[in-house]
Structures are given as C-alpha cells and as structure tokens.
Length: 410
Image (cartoon, rainbow, N blue to C red):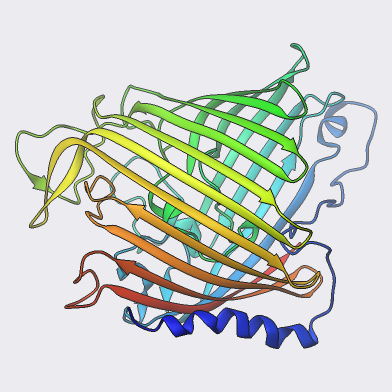
C-alpha cells in the first residue's frame, strides 16, 4: 500500500492555516446563509404576497485537483466515477449555483424550490433518459437540478405535498459540495445511489421527533421516464435528542433492466423495459459526542433483477445482483473557523451491477477553513484502493488525489 504517509497532509494544512484566519461563523459546516434578504417586502395580497419570504442564495465553486494515476484531463479516467471534481491537473470552474426557495408555513402554505447550476458539474447531474445525456464531453453546462412546488394541506398538523423534480432522499451527502463534510463526493454518493427524481411526495410530521415522507417517481435520475413503470420510495426520520439523528429510506421499482439471451457489451444501459425490479435501502445516523466532535454513519444495500453483471472480456449477462457500501465520517472543530474531517468508505460491487466488478475503499482527509465571511478554503487528500490489482494500470490498484476547493457563498 503506497503513499499512506501522505494522509497527514490535510492535518498539516489545517495547523498551518490556523494562524491567519479570522473567526466569522460559529459552525464550520453551517455555510449557507440562513437569512437571505427577502426579494420583495411583505405586502397585503396578490402576487406580492405570494412571493414574500422568498429567499435567493447561491455560491461559486472552483477547485484544483491532481491525481497521480490519471493523465492531464479528466479525473474520471480513474475506475471510480466522479459526478464532480472531474478535471485532473487543471484549475476548474466547478459550478455557479443560484437557488430560489420559498418554504411552506402555516401562514403561507404554498412554496417552491428552483436550483440551477452552471459549470462542469451541470454536465454530470443532467439526466434526460436518453443515451449520451450524461456524457462528460457534452457542450451544455447548464442544468436545473430541482424545480418543484409544495403545498401544505390542512390535514391533521399539515401534510406537505411536493410536485416536480427534487433531490434524492437517499444518502448522507448532497449534490452541492459546499454542504458536505468533505469537498470531493464519496463512493456511495457517486456510485451507489440516485441523485434526483421527478414525481410527487407527501410528508407528515407525527411529532417534533418523528416524520415520514412517501414518494412516487419516474425512477432514478430521469425526468423523462425510461419505461411505463414507476418507482416508489419512503423516508423515515427520528430525532430523539438535539445531538442525535437517524433516518431510514428506500426506493423500489422496475428500472428497466432487460434480461438478454446472451452476453452484451458491459457498457450498454438496458433501461427501456418494465423488468429489472430494483430495491435500494439506506440508513444514516449522526451523533454529536462533544461540543467539538461529531460522527456520521451511512450504509446502503441494493439489489437489481436482470441487471448487467460483468462477466469479463467487456461483456455483461443479465442476472440478479447486489451492491452495498458503508461510510463513516469524523468531524472535529479545532476552532470556530477551522474543522478537520476524516471519511472512510467501503463499497462492494463484486456482482458488477454498478459496473465495477470489484470492491473499493477510500480515505479522505479534509480541512474546512473559513478565511473571511462566506469564503471557504478546503484543502484535501484522498486515497482510493481497488481490489483489482490492475484496476488503474499494470500492477497498479490505488491512486492518490490532492487538491483544494474554494467556495464563496452569497
């Protein structure tokens, strides 16, 4: 196992930066401004009343990363898929994000959400259900990540219905780097779960500690359905104390795997039929042990019938297969403006359902530094290891990735 001594890089950078940063925020990860200025003053009625309390926010995200096993160009030449942080040895404009949100309340029961991205990341979170729409070489670099309308119906304490395109309820990480403990997305987010859905949801708070959401959606990552079947999901949360949180979630439906009569090319996405019943279960738990130390745990287990299981030589055969993974995060606040994060992940796709046909583990060290108000520096080191001894090259099964993300919020 090579270059493991380099894991101390993020900690050294954290210590070095501590001497000249200015404390701005009380919590490092609470980076999105809580109170954006209302777009319009509160008025009596009509359109103005409908738009009151609408919040506008966003961020600019840039980065530089170097992968010692990838040529200059795309980081995704690595066996591990990256939805972002994709350029290698290049100063990259990752994204400009503009968010418009209006939350539902008892006084104003109609809300909406519109999140747009412009930049490299937009290429990889745009899914139309047609071949080639997630091609990293595509020219368009704009996407609408979410666009939905919410209504809090006066049923019981209020059932909130949501219609449109929205982020997945599965997983511990979010699409925007700026709200994740580490800058680079993890293996589970990139490869084990969906990113977005289009459909309808209904959410209800049974108490201030327990809530349940139900979903009916087109499927995974597509606002144009790939078949005539729908997928159904659920999300149960429990917050027993201010320091603890647990969620259980799942999604179930026919994702269109087509059981072939013989081997087909492994990269053929057979998602145009009503077969291939797919299940995914997800659990997330967080706990704040002390004022400075907190933990996050995430686990995923999936099964797909008639999935494209890699049988070698670039061919796949339809069969029932599984994938699963776990992730753990430790977050420590050195000061009010400097935080260190360690992430460990293990992902098993030996059935080849997610097109890896191997196991993968990684460790990421991140230092989150608030330099000035709304300005975040995030130096990071990542080590990926693959069970295939020739995953990257001849007798080469691991890679080191060094870099920094710089983000500004507004």
